[in-house]
Length: 317
Ligand code: ADP
Ligand code: MG
Image (cartoon, rainbow, N blue to C red):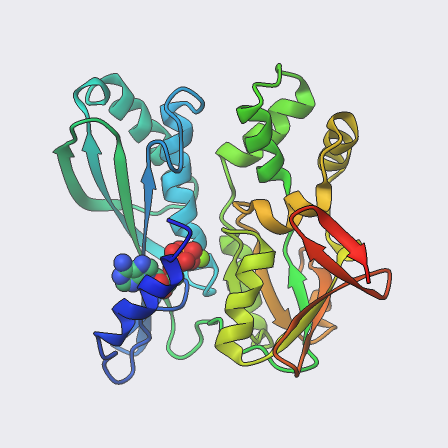
């Protein structure tokens, strides 16, 4: 659901009081303190026809992605995942081989990150497949990194290139014939990497202001950090990290790389704020893309000049 999604979530949150000491609706995970540490909980759905097409992705890839996007929400808080729960509503034609192959992909990523599946629910569906994953994680008490801690003057970073997943999806939808380049980008879309080790290392620096994972694209995701933190931001479009593969693909097909990087989403890299020397404190690349500002606006710059940005790209004022 896109249109109205956030106003419905606001409506829901007005009907429930968050108990003292807990964090509820509004961040990548809820936080429930227990026995001297914080338990992180999140849940995410994947629906056939909305999030995936059975004809365009293998069941193994969908299984991988269902787990990956949930693990990514634990990474977004700097947590360590402890268990997942899997609920599946399956139409008759997906109850046999499709479901087993889905589990093979789900098990593959679960083994890779050493996260057990501890339960779930299985039911039939009239037509479409619906998958819901719940994930539980842990974090030292009070140390989880939310969306609300961005401070004026902090630098905005991302952990990796943006737009590859969006280009992969475009390649799938446009039915581009297989080439090493096309297959690489489609792989980025189908099998995202949750940035779990990076999330923990960033939390351990104790210098990160706000953090989230990039599911919708930074043009939209960054606004959550700005709203939750009561700040604004300036993003330098020429600093967006773009992979060589994305650049090549965009040149070949006349696609707009900036648009893919900002709005296509599903990169599942981390978006975070911190001091400008933060990259010196971790052992993986952090790409600076902008600065947190006081006025509550999101401003786009290109080579130091303010630009207007919309779906068609950016233009100078
Ligand atoms: P993410 O992209 O990190 O998964 P979402 O944009 O899906 O986050 O959700 C934003 C916030 O709203 C999260 O804190 C999530 O738990 C909460 N949320 C979304 N839908 C519901 C719902 N139906 N009931 C309660 N909370 C919800
Ligand atoms: Mg998230």
